[in-house]
Image 1 (tube, rainbow, N blue to C red):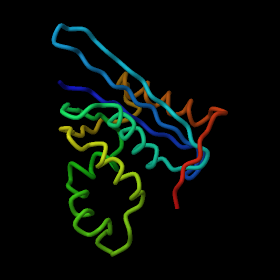
Image 2: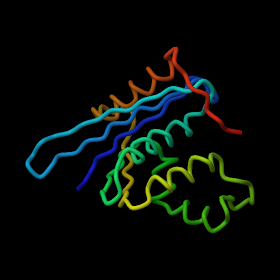
Image 3: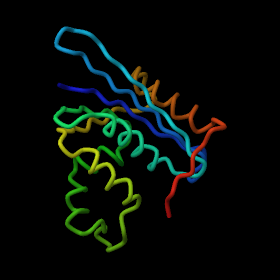
Length: 156
């Protein structure tokens, strides 16, 4: 089973109100297409936190044993895995080369937990370039950030 996960994050100010949009797509062996959307907004957050939350939300919605193709316009998220930054962070207890802590450790740990038991591949796509699902995710993220129903993001 292969699920496509499209995600985007947004913040209106950095930090400021923010949101994410996520789309999950799956076609079963009989050719039936399934799609689910998720979005949520937060009062005071950052763009990078929302990029992470979009992927986390999608992965947390899936059962173990699936293969997931993540499509994101966030180099922050895709490079962490495709350039093996995450492995270095794990070895150094989430510290960068300068010994300073990696930002958003709470969400990186949550993302790793959400990935357990799944084969996850990260694909970078250019944002605001006409990719239909990325454009929808961006629109959902912006709408969530501008909504009146914002949650509190617990971060340093």
